[in-house]
Image (cartoon, rainbow, N blue to C red; front, side, top):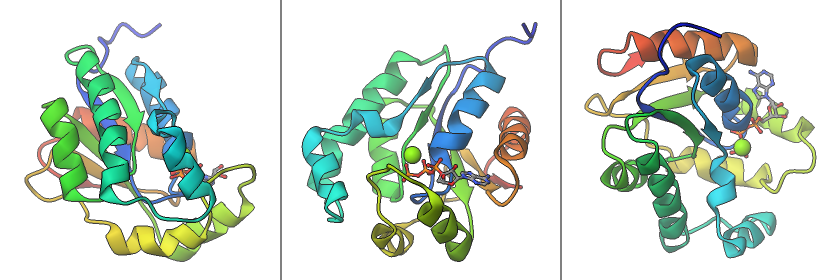
Length: 177
Ligand SMILES: Nc1ncnc2c1ncn2[C@@H]1O[C@H](COP(=O)(O)OP(=O)(O)OP(=O)(O)O)[C@@H](O)[C@H]1O
Ligand SMILES: [Mg+2]
């Protein structure tokens, strides 16, 4: 047990498919001493069926999903938590922030070919590599006015998580590492 108090902010681990949100998110949560929620678990069944068929979601599909994640985050306000959510567009992040003011984003960033290689090796997951190109096209990186940090995903998950925790705890505006 660490004597350090739990990190009070809710962190959204964002980034395109295959960047490691589900892998790194729980490590960050554990290090911060807060619960982790898997963003994919907030999708309505219809969204998962679409993605399984390789059909990109539209913004109407995403609205109830973002609202469900926002509700979870709002429920953790002041107590902290980590939730994964691709949150590719500024508008999606605005929707999350509207539900849960004070969110901090951890943007996992990586080279297209590195991520495509990891996705190709991943088994039993509904997200297909066909969606990766559209994800990169859709991605709007964090703006300078958005609370958050960027993390490169080349290192091992434990290294990314350790660096992320450091950056989150010493955050002043948007930082990259
Ligand atoms: N830092 C890393 N080093 C090596 N492999 C990694 C790393 N991070 C993730 N992976 C692997 O890459 C694949 C994709 O990771 P993961 O499923 O966590 O991504 P994701 O962002 O949650 O994707 P999705 O948006 O589709 O849910 C997995 O097979 C995972 O084991
Ligand atoms: Mg995932």
